[in-house]
Image 1 (cartoon, rainbow, N blue to C red):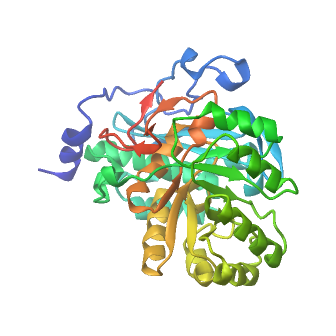
Image 2: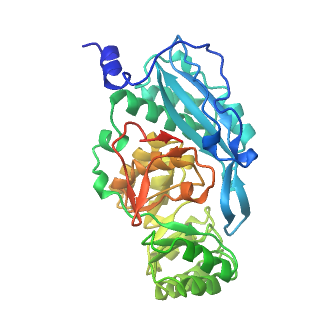
Image 3: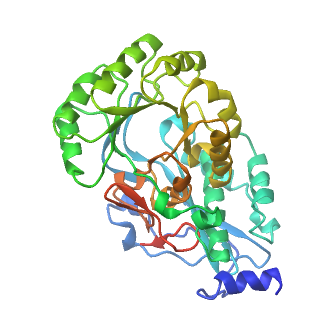
Length: 391
């Protein structure tokens, strides 16, 4: 059987391949986030399939947060986002870019980058290495924009092959780890309230730290839960000696790991701290792409891989395997994202030590249903690609 016909029979039977004009159109009728209504209130528009090869369209979609989200360097009530679709012969793959402030990307920069991407030059969506090398070469940076294309392509290819990516990678979905749920910096009373809101749903929490009130806030959380805690300083501590003192105190409070305690450029300080720390030190902002993994290896105990930093699933998988070869622990994390990007990251989770995949749970306007959390553990489904259902 020819490859083209095999791909058809593997994944295309469920959808029509009716031709529509090639001109790109916004694929949701109205911006649900700006309207105050749920995403489900606005049905998806038909995809503009190309007669030549792959086609892509995209549209801004800001994500509304359920609570004000505060970390050491900023607060926000929404996160800019761009939703992407890639289509081929009747099947559509979904992707997204999420742009928290520290990434340095904006809706305008992502849209400008995506406008330069011409996927119609490719006739085989399974040629991921070739396609993504082309996308990466369009311009430096733009990691979230590149991730959006990568995620959509992986969703599409998984649908063509009729399998989820955890299975394509040879992983066991039953080995998916617990995920943390993030409690942003707030007043002690509000942090108690946020913690109580998720009581019984998770078995590990992540608490944001990095400001002068850290100890008071940790004590407040401890008044309402005895769950293990991870903490994330988001580069908020500047002095390694102070960070070491905090880590020793946090261990006494039942904290089990510390994420990005020092500025991302302070590799020597991170190495000094990691050598003395009684808790695992996980690098986040210090690690974006594959080349960063070897550079940071001697300065931490593990790395946090996020698709918006890594340019997507393909490079994230390479980073995970290199980290393992270097003896590093691996956390799979996310930004504030819909279930599209969170489910994409979750495909790697059975190979990780830790997961922080709660970004979809922090927003009020998710457009998808994908990976679930049951008793604090990630539950991957058997649907092909990213395992998404459009709401």
